[in-house]
Image (cartoon, rainbow, N blue to C red):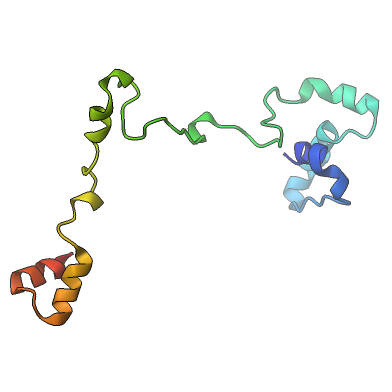
Length: 128
């Protein structure tokens, strides 16, 4: 990731510091020439040892399961055809929890404040 980042934005940086423990230092010392060769010979020697998948252009790993998938019609199964028309789209309207709220909440609160709401309605409002 650092190597790929530096390939794109390296001109803007003066130093890169790896903060590692003593235990990790030996591993970094061995692997740094693979990703940051100091000579052409070192680069040629490193090529066979580099992994095939080194991520995207920024060097970040790409995991298909974690990618955001944006569908044309959220909530509608992918196998639903467009021939069903507008009726298929309208079938989902009002089926979510917010759409099933009863009445105007602001109006109910105003009536509570004015003391004009019945005890049953008051209890229902309290439960919400």
